[in-house]
Image (cartoon, rainbow, N blue to C red; front, side):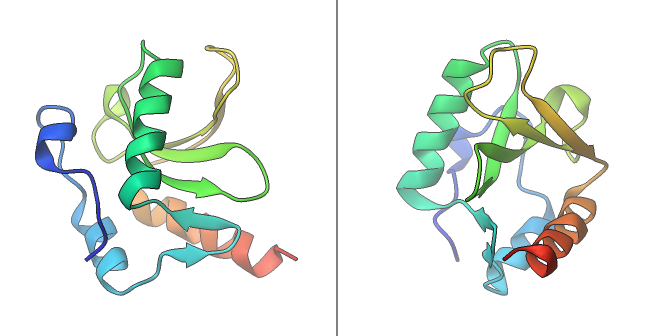
Length: 117
């Protein structure tokens, strides 16, 4: 299993969706250009996103290698809802996309993998 955020570092009431856990357990973590975060990279990105966007409740789980986009669960929009933000953008200008759940995001990540060169 990947080194994900421990329960005490997650927002109250949030747990990783089972769809995400299944994908991680299958080892599908490198979907170039997207990479699922774990370990120190995940903890660092989680702290950074919280610092840069203090008015949002975001739990990051993937980064895109060719830009500063980060896929996150957005707790304000429901625990399953995924948003893609442009990290390091000014607050209010970060939103890049939104998906109803992890599998919807994963479908797009696979399309990005197919089209990435």
